[in-house]
Length: 494
Ligand code: NAD
Image (cartoon, rainbow, N blue to C red):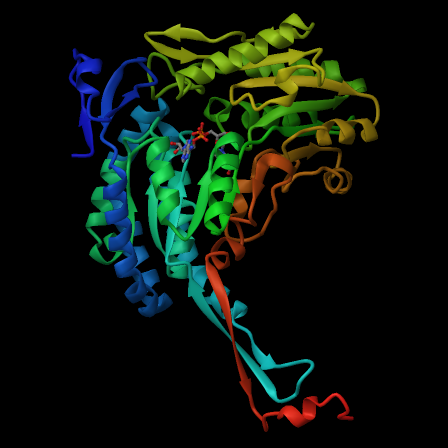
């Protein structure tokens, strides 16, 4: 048994024995679920089974792998309600949770469509540019076993983002989602079991940091999505083990709004980017820089739009803003807000978190009078807060946007696309949305991007590299003419 649904009244302390981990319901604040993580020996056993199945998975070819993954996409859609219901409890948000299974299924089918051409383009054949009798051919050799460790903010989506292209590349994959939001694993595992060829090479486990640590000791490559501090620790383990680590970490996205921008559109986009999913998104808009000449008008528009947003309490199927998934996150956001207000920031709407029926909620919160001495402008907040700072010229806006430990993504709003593009080129971030926020999600298989600074390491998870990074390239080199003998290498040979 890997999980237990707890009855209404229970003694968590008594039940959480033998290493079981309690899972809190974000809408009630109650622990109502337990997971039972495997021990290191069990993880080693799972990994051995995956390794055993992987050579046949690779040998079967891309056509077979894509056909199997398409069957998984069908199974996900067939189980979409159960997955969505479970993720709704995990996250306290209903609409996105019920859309995610369809997004994942579409993403699987998209990768299946794209994969053969990606492989074909990367497979190089030719004659050496320095030696006319040497021919080369590329062979691909997948890392046999990939570990995926994912965070709580998008439980199902982020546990599959790297796993799907890795499976198509020919890897076997072990996935460990966050212990904060693990309920979706049961219905997802049921769907995997319906596709036996896939079940042999894809395994989900539930557990916390200890389980993650055990996995990193077993695998041949790691994809980690989560915080900078955990990413740094895992990168060190991977360096010791000499295996590649692909890290997708935190963000502190900036948005720049120029004097020529459409302020109503810019405010709507900034609000969506900052508040969607309660701000619990790596590429959430967390800082806004506005030309001083339109600052007050922008803030008035933004505040008017923000005031209209409703919490999804008491009805999970209504409103815009759900509870904090992780109760502790509300304390972090409150602390950032308190720090800003103590240093002179001005609150226009929203404010500190409130507890409703045990869930921790925060209304859309707009702040002005902020600066880079405040945590709210420097550290990842991960809450529905929009701090707005005025700038005097575009050089100052770019300097402020680039004054960050992070560099995941950013946004620019200007009077026209050319003006926005010219500014976007100067911002140090892996993806810059122009005339909207958070467009990164739209380019999953299309375009590669590199995270700047502490936001990531190890190459793009997007575009063709999202799949090719799981393949070791082997060059097969053929001498097509006579072998040069040692006489041709004599010191005095002409
Ligand atoms: P986290 O680092 O606390 O945990 C992430 C995962 O790592 C969890 O599964 C956790 O159990 C595991 N883990 C924790 N310590 C570990 C250890 N020592 N060894 C092995 N595994 C360990 O992150 P979180 O709080 O779950 O997620 C929020 C963070 O994720 C934010 O910083 C957010 O920006 C980031 N994030 C980044 C992206 C991206 O694509 N760049 C996407 C979503 C979230």
